[in-house]
Length: 450
Ligand code: NDP
Image 1: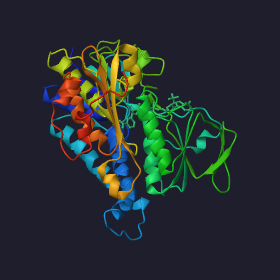
Image 2 (image 1 turned 180 degrees about the vertical axis):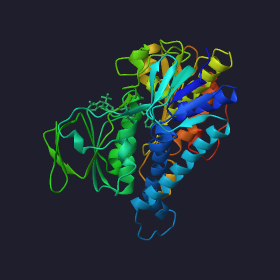
Image 3 (image 1 turned 180 degrees about the horizontal axis):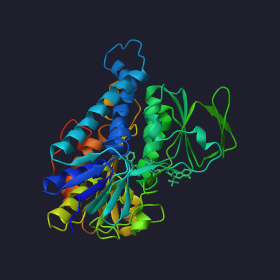
Image 4 (image 1 turned 90 degrees about the vertical axis):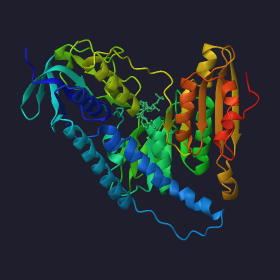
Protein backbone atom coordinates (compact mmCIF):
# COMPACT_ATOMS: atom_id res chain seq x y z
CA UNK A 1 0.00 0.00 0.00
CA UNK A 2 1.36 3.40 -0.90
CA UNK A 3 1.42 6.21 1.65
CA UNK A 4 1.58 9.94 0.98
CA UNK A 5 4.62 10.16 3.27
CA UNK A 6 7.01 7.86 5.07
CA UNK A 7 6.72 10.12 8.14
CA UNK A 8 4.18 12.68 9.28
CA UNK A 9 5.34 14.70 12.29
CA UNK A 10 2.79 16.51 14.45
CA UNK A 11 4.40 19.43 16.28
CA UNK A 12 7.19 21.74 15.14
CA UNK A 13 9.16 22.09 18.36
CA UNK A 14 12.63 20.89 19.30
CA UNK A 15 11.78 17.18 18.99
CA UNK A 16 9.53 17.34 15.93
CA UNK A 17 11.77 19.59 13.87
CA UNK A 18 14.86 17.50 14.58
CA UNK A 19 13.07 14.26 13.70
CA UNK A 20 11.66 15.73 10.47
CA UNK A 21 15.06 17.01 9.31
CA UNK A 22 17.01 13.89 10.20
CA UNK A 23 14.43 11.53 8.69
CA UNK A 24 14.41 13.55 5.49
CA UNK A 25 18.22 13.49 5.37
CA UNK A 26 18.00 9.70 5.80
CA UNK A 27 15.97 9.53 2.59
CA UNK A 28 12.41 9.46 3.96
CA UNK A 29 9.58 11.56 2.53
CA UNK A 30 8.50 13.75 5.44
CA UNK A 31 5.75 16.23 6.29
CA UNK A 32 5.33 18.23 9.48
CA UNK A 33 2.40 20.22 10.87
CA UNK A 34 2.54 22.99 13.47
CA UNK A 35 -0.48 24.95 14.68
CA UNK A 36 1.35 27.88 16.29
CA UNK A 37 4.95 28.78 15.44
CA UNK A 38 8.01 26.81 14.26
CA UNK A 39 10.41 26.22 17.12
CA UNK A 40 7.89 25.23 19.77
CA UNK A 41 8.03 26.06 23.45
CA UNK A 42 11.83 26.21 23.74
CA UNK A 43 12.35 28.75 21.00
CA UNK A 44 9.10 30.70 21.06
CA UNK A 45 8.09 30.89 24.72
CA UNK A 46 10.51 28.93 26.81
CA UNK A 47 14.25 28.39 27.17
CA UNK A 48 15.48 30.87 24.58
CA UNK A 49 13.44 34.00 25.38
CA UNK A 50 13.75 33.10 29.07
CA UNK A 51 17.56 33.07 28.87
CA UNK A 52 17.54 36.43 27.06
CA UNK A 53 15.45 37.79 29.92
CA UNK A 54 17.85 36.28 32.47
CA UNK A 55 20.72 38.19 30.82
CA UNK A 56 18.65 41.37 30.87
CA UNK A 57 17.77 41.01 34.53
CA UNK A 58 21.33 40.33 35.68
CA UNK A 59 22.54 43.79 34.68
CA UNK A 60 21.05 45.37 37.81
CA UNK A 61 23.50 43.36 39.93
CA UNK A 62 26.33 43.96 37.47
CA UNK A 63 25.88 47.74 37.73
CA UNK A 64 26.00 47.49 41.54
CA UNK A 65 29.05 45.20 41.50
CA UNK A 66 30.89 47.55 39.10
CA UNK A 67 31.10 50.21 41.81
CA UNK A 68 33.37 47.99 43.88
CA UNK A 69 35.81 47.89 40.98
CA UNK A 70 36.07 51.66 40.70
CA UNK A 71 33.31 52.36 38.22
CA UNK A 72 30.78 55.13 38.77
CA UNK A 73 27.57 54.02 37.22
CA UNK A 74 25.13 56.80 36.49
CA UNK A 75 21.42 56.52 36.79
CA UNK A 76 20.21 53.33 35.17
CA UNK A 77 16.76 52.64 33.80
CA UNK A 78 15.24 49.55 32.29
CA UNK A 79 12.93 49.68 29.30
CA UNK A 80 10.78 46.53 29.14
CA UNK A 81 9.33 47.26 25.72
CA UNK A 82 12.81 47.67 24.18
CA UNK A 83 13.83 44.29 25.54
CA UNK A 84 10.63 42.62 24.37
CA UNK A 85 11.00 44.09 20.87
CA UNK A 86 14.62 42.94 20.63
CA UNK A 87 13.70 39.52 21.97
CA UNK A 88 10.80 39.19 19.51
CA UNK A 89 13.12 40.04 16.62
CA UNK A 90 15.59 37.37 17.65
CA UNK A 91 12.85 34.78 18.14
CA UNK A 92 11.43 35.58 14.68
CA UNK A 93 14.94 35.09 13.22
CA UNK A 94 15.28 31.71 14.92
CA UNK A 95 11.81 30.67 13.80
CA UNK A 96 12.67 31.41 10.16
CA UNK A 97 15.91 29.48 10.52
CA UNK A 98 14.00 26.44 11.80
CA UNK A 99 11.60 26.71 8.89
CA UNK A 100 14.34 27.22 6.30
CA UNK A 101 16.41 24.31 7.62
CA UNK A 102 13.51 21.94 7.16
CA UNK A 103 12.60 23.27 3.72
CA UNK A 104 16.23 22.99 2.62
CA UNK A 105 16.20 19.24 3.17
CA UNK A 106 12.84 18.70 1.49
CA UNK A 107 10.45 18.46 4.43
CA UNK A 108 6.92 19.57 3.53
CA UNK A 109 5.60 22.10 6.05
CA UNK A 110 1.96 22.62 7.02
CA UNK A 111 0.94 25.54 9.22
CA UNK A 112 -2.13 23.82 10.59
CA UNK A 113 -3.38 21.75 13.48
CA UNK A 114 -3.16 18.02 12.82
CA UNK A 115 -5.13 15.23 14.46
CA UNK A 116 -4.76 11.50 14.07
CA UNK A 117 -7.72 9.75 12.50
CA UNK A 118 -6.26 6.23 12.38
CA UNK A 119 -2.83 4.58 12.82
CA UNK A 120 -1.71 5.82 9.38
CA UNK A 121 -3.84 8.92 8.76
CA UNK A 122 -3.58 12.54 9.79
CA UNK A 123 -6.23 15.18 9.25
CA UNK A 124 -5.34 18.87 9.10
CA UNK A 125 -7.44 21.84 10.24
CA UNK A 126 -7.27 23.00 6.61
CA UNK A 127 -9.38 19.98 5.66
CA UNK A 128 -6.61 17.99 3.94
CA UNK A 129 -6.01 14.37 4.90
CA UNK A 130 -2.69 12.55 4.48
CA UNK A 131 -1.54 9.01 4.99
CA UNK A 132 1.86 8.12 6.40
CA UNK A 133 3.75 4.92 7.13
CA UNK A 134 4.80 6.40 10.49
CA UNK A 135 3.34 9.20 12.59
CA UNK A 136 5.47 11.00 15.18
CA UNK A 137 3.66 12.96 17.89
CA UNK A 138 5.83 15.77 19.26
CA UNK A 139 3.21 18.20 20.50
CA UNK A 140 4.97 19.10 23.76
CA UNK A 141 3.18 20.44 26.80
CA UNK A 142 1.23 23.45 27.99
CA UNK A 143 1.04 25.32 31.29
CA UNK A 144 -1.35 23.89 33.87
CA UNK A 145 -3.28 26.24 36.15
CA UNK A 146 -5.10 24.69 39.13
CA UNK A 147 -8.75 25.37 39.68
CA UNK A 148 -8.50 28.41 41.99
CA UNK A 149 -11.30 30.94 42.39
CA UNK A 150 -10.38 33.87 40.15
CA UNK A 151 -7.94 31.85 38.02
CA UNK A 152 -9.12 33.79 34.95
CA UNK A 153 -7.03 36.76 36.20
CA UNK A 154 -3.69 34.95 36.22
CA UNK A 155 -1.09 34.57 33.50
CA UNK A 156 1.26 31.68 32.73
CA UNK A 157 4.71 31.44 31.16
CA UNK A 158 2.94 31.68 27.77
CA UNK A 159 1.87 35.26 28.43
CA UNK A 160 4.81 36.58 30.44
CA UNK A 161 6.88 37.07 27.27
CA UNK A 162 4.31 39.45 25.80
CA UNK A 163 3.22 41.75 28.62
CA UNK A 164 2.98 45.42 27.61
CA UNK A 165 4.91 46.59 30.67
CA UNK A 166 7.03 45.22 33.45
CA UNK A 167 4.53 44.80 36.30
CA UNK A 168 5.48 46.73 39.46
CA UNK A 169 4.13 44.13 41.89
CA UNK A 170 4.17 40.48 40.89
CA UNK A 171 3.07 37.31 42.60
CA UNK A 172 4.66 34.09 41.38
CA UNK A 173 2.92 30.86 42.38
CA UNK A 174 4.85 27.57 42.31
CA UNK A 175 8.25 26.35 43.39
CA UNK A 176 9.55 24.61 40.27
CA UNK A 177 11.97 25.66 37.52
CA UNK A 178 9.71 28.23 35.89
CA UNK A 179 8.45 29.85 39.09
CA UNK A 180 11.94 30.28 40.56
CA UNK A 181 13.51 31.48 37.33
CA UNK A 182 10.82 34.11 36.75
CA UNK A 183 10.80 35.26 40.37
CA UNK A 184 14.52 36.07 39.88
CA UNK A 185 14.10 37.57 36.40
CA UNK A 186 11.29 39.93 37.40
CA UNK A 187 13.06 40.90 40.62
CA UNK A 188 16.26 41.67 38.71
CA UNK A 189 14.34 43.92 36.35
CA UNK A 190 12.96 45.91 39.26
CA UNK A 191 9.58 44.38 40.08
CA UNK A 192 8.55 43.73 43.67
CA UNK A 193 8.21 39.94 43.73
CA UNK A 194 6.30 37.73 46.14
CA UNK A 195 6.56 33.99 45.57
CA UNK A 196 4.24 31.38 47.06
CA UNK A 197 5.06 27.72 47.17
CA UNK A 198 2.75 25.15 48.75
CA UNK A 199 5.50 22.76 49.89
CA UNK A 200 8.14 23.24 52.56
CA UNK A 201 11.04 24.10 50.24
CA UNK A 202 11.26 25.22 46.60
CA UNK A 203 12.69 23.05 43.80
CA UNK A 204 11.42 19.69 44.99
CA UNK A 205 13.53 16.81 43.73
CA UNK A 206 16.84 18.72 43.76
CA UNK A 207 19.56 18.36 46.40
CA UNK A 208 18.33 19.59 49.78
CA UNK A 209 21.25 21.92 50.49
CA UNK A 210 21.04 23.38 46.99
CA UNK A 211 17.37 24.16 47.54
CA UNK A 212 18.08 25.80 50.89
CA UNK A 213 21.02 27.79 49.54
CA UNK A 214 19.08 29.15 46.57
CA UNK A 215 16.04 29.98 48.70
CA UNK A 216 18.28 31.91 51.14
CA UNK A 217 19.99 33.82 48.32
CA UNK A 218 16.67 34.68 46.67
CA UNK A 219 15.37 36.05 49.99
CA UNK A 220 18.65 37.91 50.58
CA UNK A 221 18.18 39.67 47.24
CA UNK A 222 14.71 40.80 48.26
CA UNK A 223 12.28 38.26 46.86
CA UNK A 224 9.50 37.66 49.39
CA UNK A 225 9.46 33.88 49.24
CA UNK A 226 6.75 32.21 51.32
CA UNK A 227 6.81 28.44 51.55
CA UNK A 228 3.92 26.38 52.88
CA UNK A 229 1.64 29.00 51.35
CA UNK A 230 -0.91 28.81 48.58
CA UNK A 231 -3.52 30.96 46.91
CA UNK A 232 -7.13 30.61 48.08
CA UNK A 233 -8.88 33.17 45.92
CA UNK A 234 -8.15 36.04 43.52
CA UNK A 235 -10.36 39.09 43.02
CA UNK A 236 -9.94 42.05 40.72
CA UNK A 237 -9.99 45.48 42.40
CA UNK A 238 -9.68 49.03 41.04
CA UNK A 239 -6.00 49.11 41.89
CA UNK A 240 -4.92 45.57 41.01
CA UNK A 241 -5.51 41.96 41.93
CA UNK A 242 -6.23 40.93 45.48
CA UNK A 243 -4.87 37.53 46.50
CA UNK A 244 -6.28 35.79 49.55
CA UNK A 245 -3.74 33.31 50.86
CA UNK A 246 -3.64 30.25 53.05
CA UNK A 247 -1.48 32.23 55.48
CA UNK A 248 -4.55 34.33 56.21
CA UNK A 249 -3.18 37.48 54.58
CA UNK A 250 -4.32 39.44 51.55
CA UNK A 251 -1.78 40.71 49.01
CA UNK A 252 -2.42 43.24 46.30
CA UNK A 253 -0.37 42.83 43.14
CA UNK A 254 -0.54 43.85 39.47
CA UNK A 255 0.23 40.48 37.90
CA UNK A 256 -0.04 36.90 39.08
CA UNK A 257 2.12 34.33 37.32
CA UNK A 258 1.11 30.72 37.87
CA UNK A 259 4.00 28.34 37.19
CA UNK A 260 2.35 25.27 38.64
CA UNK A 261 3.59 22.67 36.21
CA UNK A 262 2.86 21.64 32.65
CA UNK A 263 0.67 18.99 31.09
CA UNK A 264 1.20 16.99 27.90
CA UNK A 265 -0.59 18.40 24.85
CA UNK A 266 -2.70 15.41 23.90
CA UNK A 267 -6.26 16.68 24.16
CA UNK A 268 -8.28 16.26 20.99
CA UNK A 269 -5.37 14.69 19.09
CA UNK A 270 -7.37 11.57 18.22
CA UNK A 271 -5.09 9.29 20.23
CA UNK A 272 -7.88 7.32 21.91
CA UNK A 273 -9.57 6.66 18.59
CA UNK A 274 -6.32 5.43 17.06
CA UNK A 275 -5.74 3.20 20.10
CA UNK A 276 -2.70 5.01 21.53
CA UNK A 277 -2.25 4.44 25.27
CA UNK A 278 -2.20 7.62 27.32
CA UNK A 279 -1.14 7.91 30.99
CA UNK A 280 -3.01 9.48 33.90
CA UNK A 281 -1.63 12.95 33.29
CA UNK A 282 -2.46 12.81 29.56
CA UNK A 283 1.09 11.87 28.55
CA UNK A 284 1.69 9.37 25.76
CA UNK A 285 3.05 6.07 27.00
CA UNK A 286 6.08 4.94 24.99
CA UNK A 287 8.75 2.24 25.17
CA UNK A 288 12.51 2.86 25.17
CA UNK A 289 12.39 3.42 21.39
CA UNK A 290 9.64 6.05 21.78
CA UNK A 291 7.12 3.68 20.17
CA UNK A 292 3.51 3.93 21.43
CA UNK A 293 1.03 1.10 21.88
CA UNK A 294 0.22 1.53 18.15
CA UNK A 295 3.28 0.27 16.21
CA UNK A 296 3.12 2.94 13.48
CA UNK A 297 2.86 5.83 15.96
CA UNK A 298 5.82 7.17 17.93
CA UNK A 299 6.12 10.09 20.35
CA UNK A 300 9.06 12.17 21.60
CA UNK A 301 9.63 15.11 23.95
CA UNK A 302 7.44 16.65 26.65
CA UNK A 303 4.30 14.95 25.32
CA UNK A 304 5.74 11.69 26.71
CA UNK A 305 6.60 13.29 30.08
CA UNK A 306 9.86 11.42 30.52
CA UNK A 307 12.49 14.10 31.22
CA UNK A 308 11.03 17.37 29.99
CA UNK A 309 14.06 19.18 28.63
CA UNK A 310 14.91 20.37 25.11
CA UNK A 311 18.14 18.38 24.68
CA UNK A 312 16.30 15.24 25.78
CA UNK A 313 13.56 15.75 23.18
CA UNK A 314 16.27 16.22 20.54
CA UNK A 315 18.04 13.02 21.59
CA UNK A 316 14.75 11.12 21.55
CA UNK A 317 14.09 12.43 18.02
CA UNK A 318 17.56 11.35 16.83
CA UNK A 319 17.13 7.90 18.37
CA UNK A 320 13.70 7.58 16.73
CA UNK A 321 15.16 8.33 13.29
CA UNK A 322 18.06 5.96 13.90
CA UNK A 323 15.63 3.21 14.93
CA UNK A 324 12.92 3.65 12.31
CA UNK A 325 14.74 5.02 9.25
CA UNK A 326 18.28 3.69 9.63
CA UNK A 327 17.52 0.18 10.82
CA UNK A 328 19.58 0.66 13.96
CA UNK A 329 17.43 0.17 17.08
CA UNK A 330 18.61 2.92 19.46
CA UNK A 331 17.17 3.44 22.93
CA UNK A 332 17.61 6.83 24.62
CA UNK A 333 19.85 6.95 27.66
CA UNK A 334 18.04 9.07 30.25
CA UNK A 335 20.68 8.54 32.96
CA UNK A 336 22.89 11.32 34.37
CA UNK A 337 21.40 14.26 32.50
CA UNK A 338 23.21 17.47 33.41
CA UNK A 339 20.89 20.45 33.69
CA UNK A 340 20.81 24.08 34.75
CA UNK A 341 18.20 26.18 36.46
CA UNK A 342 18.61 29.84 35.66
CA UNK A 343 17.75 31.22 39.04
CA UNK A 344 19.98 33.96 40.46
CA UNK A 345 22.26 32.42 41.60
CA UNK A 346 22.19 29.80 38.90
CA UNK A 347 22.12 26.04 39.59
CA UNK A 348 24.00 23.37 37.66
CA UNK A 349 23.35 19.80 38.62
CA UNK A 350 24.03 16.24 37.45
CA UNK A 351 23.40 12.89 39.07
CA UNK A 352 22.01 12.06 42.47
CA UNK A 353 21.10 14.47 45.25
CA UNK A 354 22.63 13.72 48.65
CA UNK A 355 19.24 12.44 49.84
CA UNK A 356 18.70 10.05 46.90
CA UNK A 357 22.29 8.81 47.00
CA UNK A 358 22.03 8.10 50.73
CA UNK A 359 18.93 5.96 50.09
CA UNK A 360 20.94 3.96 47.59
CA UNK A 361 24.31 3.33 49.28
CA UNK A 362 26.99 4.58 51.68
CA UNK A 363 28.33 7.92 50.52
CA UNK A 364 30.78 10.69 51.31
CA UNK A 365 29.74 14.29 50.84
CA UNK A 366 32.26 16.95 49.83
CA UNK A 367 31.02 20.49 50.04
CA UNK A 368 32.41 23.97 49.79
CA UNK A 369 30.58 27.27 50.27
CA UNK A 370 32.54 30.43 49.59
CA UNK A 371 32.39 33.99 48.35
CA UNK A 372 33.67 34.00 44.76
CA UNK A 373 36.49 36.45 44.02
CA UNK A 374 34.24 38.50 41.75
CA UNK A 375 32.07 39.28 44.76
CA UNK A 376 34.80 40.35 47.17
CA UNK A 377 35.56 43.84 45.84
CA UNK A 378 31.94 44.20 44.86
CA UNK A 379 30.96 43.52 48.46
CA UNK A 380 28.23 41.34 47.08
CA UNK A 381 27.22 38.92 49.85
CA UNK A 382 26.13 36.16 47.44
CA UNK A 383 27.91 32.89 48.15
CA UNK A 384 28.70 30.05 45.83
CA UNK A 385 28.23 26.38 46.68
CA UNK A 386 29.76 23.23 45.24
CA UNK A 387 29.02 19.74 46.29
CA UNK A 388 30.18 16.27 45.28
CA UNK A 389 28.40 13.09 46.31
CA UNK A 390 30.80 10.14 46.25
CA UNK A 391 30.13 6.40 46.53
CA UNK A 392 32.14 4.90 49.40
CA UNK A 393 32.32 1.53 47.67
CA UNK A 394 33.16 2.45 44.07
CA UNK A 395 34.59 5.97 44.75
CA UNK A 396 32.53 7.15 41.76
CA UNK A 397 31.15 10.66 41.85
CA UNK A 398 27.40 10.03 41.92
CA UNK A 399 26.29 13.64 41.86
CA UNK A 400 27.63 17.15 41.44
CA UNK A 401 25.72 20.27 42.42
CA UNK A 402 26.89 23.81 41.79
CA UNK A 403 25.17 27.04 42.79
CA UNK A 404 26.61 30.30 41.53
CA UNK A 405 27.70 32.23 38.50
CA UNK A 406 28.24 30.07 35.38
CA UNK A 407 27.04 26.90 37.14
CA UNK A 408 25.26 25.89 33.92
CA UNK A 409 28.46 26.21 31.90
CA UNK A 410 30.46 24.23 34.47
CA UNK A 411 28.01 21.38 34.87
CA UNK A 412 28.12 20.60 31.16
CA UNK A 413 31.81 19.69 31.54
CA UNK A 414 31.43 17.92 34.87
CA UNK A 415 28.62 15.95 33.21
CA UNK A 416 31.12 14.39 30.79
CA UNK A 417 33.41 13.24 33.60
CA UNK A 418 30.55 11.80 35.63
CA UNK A 419 29.05 10.10 32.58
CA UNK A 420 32.44 8.47 32.02
CA UNK A 421 32.36 7.16 35.57
CA UNK A 422 34.95 9.48 37.12
CA UNK A 423 35.93 8.77 40.72
CA UNK A 424 36.70 11.33 43.43
CA UNK A 425 40.38 10.45 42.88
CA UNK A 426 40.04 11.33 39.17
CA UNK A 427 38.75 14.75 40.22
CA UNK A 428 41.61 15.06 42.74
CA UNK A 429 44.37 14.28 40.23
CA UNK A 430 43.05 16.87 37.82
CA UNK A 431 45.07 20.08 38.10
CA UNK A 432 43.13 23.13 39.30
CA UNK A 433 42.57 26.09 36.99
CA UNK A 434 43.53 29.13 39.03
CA UNK A 435 42.04 31.55 39.91
CA UNK A 436 38.57 30.32 39.10
CA UNK A 437 35.55 29.30 41.11
CA UNK A 438 35.50 25.93 39.36
CA UNK A 439 38.86 24.92 40.88
CA UNK A 440 36.98 24.13 44.09
CA UNK A 441 35.64 21.06 42.29
CA UNK A 442 39.09 19.47 42.26
CA UNK A 443 40.42 20.78 45.57
CA UNK A 444 37.86 19.55 48.10
CA UNK A 445 40.05 17.41 50.37
CA UNK A 446 37.93 16.08 53.24
CA UNK A 447 34.33 14.96 53.30
CA UNK A 448 32.00 17.14 55.38
CA UNK A 449 29.82 14.10 56.07
CA UNK A 450 29.87 10.40 55.41
P1 NDP B 1 7.58 21.93 37.80
O1 NDP B 1 6.91 20.62 37.74
O2 NDP B 1 9.05 22.02 37.87
O3 NDP B 1 7.01 22.74 39.04
C1 NDP B 1 5.65 22.90 39.27
C2 NDP B 1 5.45 23.63 40.57
O4 NDP B 1 4.09 23.94 40.77
C3 NDP B 1 5.88 22.77 41.77
O5 NDP B 1 6.48 23.61 42.70
C4 NDP B 1 4.54 22.22 42.26
O6 NDP B 1 4.53 21.95 43.62
C5 NDP B 1 3.63 23.39 41.98
N1 NDP B 1 2.25 22.96 41.81
C6 NDP B 1 1.78 21.98 41.02
N2 NDP B 1 0.44 21.88 41.12
C7 NDP B 1 0.05 22.82 41.98
C8 NDP B 1 -1.21 23.20 42.53
N3 NDP B 1 -2.31 22.57 42.16
N4 NDP B 1 -1.24 24.22 43.40
C9 NDP B 1 -0.10 24.84 43.78
N5 NDP B 1 1.12 24.53 43.32
C10 NDP B 1 1.21 23.51 42.44
O7 NDP B 1 6.99 22.72 36.56
P2 NDP B 1 7.39 24.08 35.84
O8 NDP B 1 6.09 24.60 35.32
O9 NDP B 1 8.19 24.96 36.70
O10 NDP B 1 8.29 23.58 34.64
C11 NDP B 1 7.81 22.58 33.73
C12 NDP B 1 8.95 21.78 33.16
O11 NDP B 1 9.65 22.58 32.24
C13 NDP B 1 9.97 21.32 34.17
O12 NDP B 1 9.65 20.06 34.66
C14 NDP B 1 11.24 21.33 33.42
O13 NDP B 1 11.50 20.03 32.93
C15 NDP B 1 11.02 22.27 32.26
N6 NDP B 1 11.81 23.50 32.42
C16 NDP B 1 13.16 23.44 32.44
C17 NDP B 1 13.93 24.56 32.60
C18 NDP B 1 15.41 24.47 32.65
O14 NDP B 1 15.96 23.45 32.25
N7 NDP B 1 16.13 25.48 33.13
C19 NDP B 1 13.30 25.88 32.76
C20 NDP B 1 11.89 25.84 32.74
C21 NDP B 1 11.18 24.70 32.58
P3 NDP B 1 5.03 20.53 44.24
O15 NDP B 1 6.51 20.57 44.23
O16 NDP B 1 4.46 20.56 45.62
O17 NDP B 1 4.44 19.48 43.39
